[in-house]
Length: 119
Image (cartoon, rainbow, N blue to C red; front, top):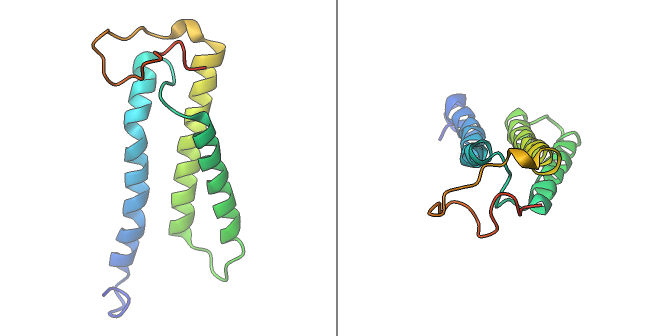
């Protein structure tokens, strides 16, 4: 409807909303990481593949006739969020594992491995 009536606000909102939702989707993981001072329940293989996908998607935008800023914002937010999880993984799990907090026995958010076993 926005394209047919030359209303760009609808198109812009449809492009900005996914960026906001992507960021909000990472927040629970960040809260858990900071709560337990450990990256638990996250596949680093997946995070690495997701970050690589963002990089290649950004590169693909360079070969389009016109640069799609909203698409670039989506790829950049995923890349930044993935890199932040990776950085926290190395900081907490590899360099400072003694900082990890032991969860309560009734905590259902963690995987069965626990915060000190995710290496």
